[in-house]
Structures are given as structure tokens and as C-alpha cells.
Image (cartoon, rainbow, N blue to C red; front, side):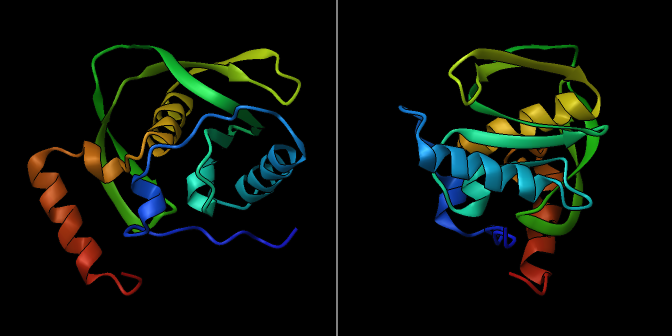
Length: 163
């Protein structure tokens, strides 16, 4: 498949709460295929449907060699005190900032057959799960930054060559 272009900060789809998938049909299957193909590219831990311009609650992930997807994910558990971790985003290219994330996260959703599935993990997986669900809720990691870090991040966005 041709690479689907990633939507960048400033695109309204990134600030819109994604609609739940009501019916798993050929369109949703094609979306999952596109997301899984897109996340296999080097340097990608996750791609959410809004990042490729689709306002549906689906994301793919690629963490520690495990590639997959989840439809209609919802965070059902986070634990541990939030820690500041270096985080970046394909929709905010080239910028990394200290972002508060819980060290453990668990999400539940469904697969293409409508079966309930659960994803959980620590470290990068926990970070990716929180990051991707944020995308589906119309949030970017920049929205999670502490005040001074956010100010610096927004300055860096304004000075970037892609903005």
C-alpha cells in the first residue's frame, strides 16, 4: 500500500474526538490494514486513525517487535505515579518533550471479528497505549505537558519548518 500521509499539528482532525466503530465492514478492515502497514515503518510505535485523517476509534502499535491493532479501545487501568518520559509524535515531527505518563496501562477493545481483546504493558507499551488513546480523544501529547514544558514545546512548533 502507498504510505498514508500523517496529519500534522494544526489539522482539525487531530483535535476531534473520534467516533466509535459501529460496524466492522470492509472499510474498517481496510483502515486496520493501512494502520498496521503504516506502523511497520521504522521509528513508529503507534499510529491512530486520526493521524491518517480518519475519525474512528482505531489504532495500531509496534512495540518490542509486537505489531497489532485495537478497535474502540478504552483505558481500563493505569497504575503507578505518572513519570516524566521523553515523548514524541509523528504529528509533531522532530520534537521530543518530557511528558507525564503512568508506568502501566491496560486498554480493552475489540478485534476485526468483534472479539474483546486487551492490551497491557509497562514502559514503552504503557506510554504508547496512553498516547494512542489520547489521539482518539482529540488530545496530543503537547496537551499533557507541564506549563513550562508546554510553553517551550509550542515555541518549538512555531519555529519548526513544517508548521
